[in-house]
Image 1 (cartoon, rainbow, N blue to C red):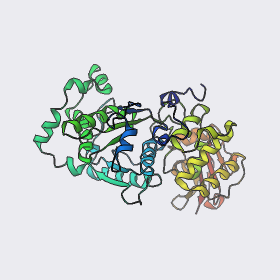
Image 2: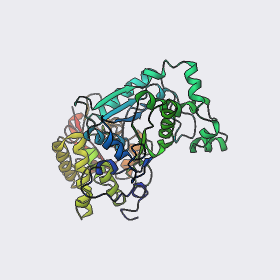
Image 3: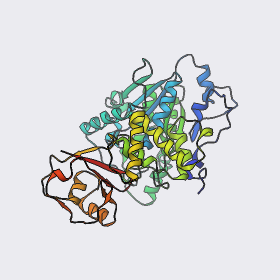
Image 4: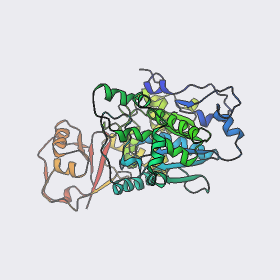
Length: 420
C-alpha cells in the first residue's frame, strides 16, 4: 500500500489551505469539524469565525476517563491538538472523568465494561497527568484547567437525572453503532450504559465548552454535548474529531492489548527503536499527527524519514539529548557491539536468586511476558547478550558477576542493562 493510501491517511481531511493560512494548526491532522461551513461568516457554523470574532479565549474541552494507568501515542493526538489551541491563546480544559470512569464508556465495547473503584480511578488519574505534562502547558496562567466531573455529577439529584434522560430516546441510543450491534446479537445492554453519553455531554454544559475534542469513535458523544448545551440554553460547542492512530503493525489501531503501541512512559531507547521501524505506509500520517514538522520538507530517503520521525517524537518526551543518545545506542545495538549509552534502561539483579536460568531472567526483567514466552524467544533466536545470540534455552548463570553491566536484548525493540 502506498504511503499516502493507508486507511489512516485516507481518514485525514485534505484541506487546501494557503501556505500562510493562520489556521493551518487547526486543520492539521483532523478527520472532521462539525458543524463546518467554510464560506460562512456565522460563528456558529464556522469555527474559524468563532475564533476570530470571540472577545475572549475559547474554552477547549477534552475528557479522558482514567480507566488504565498507561497512555500511548494514540492517546497523544488529541492532547497535542489541545496544546495547539493553548499555543493559539485559548484555554484548554483537561477533564478527568473520575465519575464516568466508574461506569465505563461503552464506545467500541462488545460487552459491559468492568466498573472501577474511586481509589483505582484517582490513582490512574495521577499517572495520566504525569504522562501528559511533556505535551501540555501547565505553567502559563489561564492556559489550562484540570477539572473532575465528580464536581457536578456526584451531587446530581433525581430530577436532574430525569431531565437528562428525557432529552434522548431509546431509538437514538440504539442508533449508536456498538449498541445496535449488541442489541442484534442479544448481548446485554445495561441502562447505566445509556446514561454515559448523557453524562459526558452534560460535562460540556457544566464547563461551558466552545469546542470539544475527541477521536472518531467519540463523535456520537460530542454531538450529545451540543444537544444538551442547546437544551440548557447555551451556545452549542463545535466538535473536532481526530483519527484513531494506527499501531506499529500498520493495520489495526494502536492498542496495548494488541501489542502494537508505543507508550509515553517507555524509555527513550525503546521509544526510538519502535519509531525507527515505522512502516512506510504510516510515515506520512505519523509525521502529520505526531509532530509539527513541515510535511513538504521531509527527507526523500525512506530510512532518513524513519530516523527523523523517531528522533523528533522521542525528543518530545525525553528531550533532545536523550533522543540523540537513544539514536546512537540503537545503531550500536543493531551492529551487535557493546553499548555504553545511558539510553539503555537498567534492571537490577539485586532481587534475583542465583543460580538463575536465562529464561527466568528475561521474564523478571519484563523483556518477555512470561517464562514460557522467554523460552520461545530464545529458541527463535531473538535473544542476545552483549550482541551475541543466545539459543541455549537452559543457559544458567551461577553468579551476577557474569552479567554485571551487560545488555540483554529481545528482538529489535527491547533492551535492559543488567546492574547490581
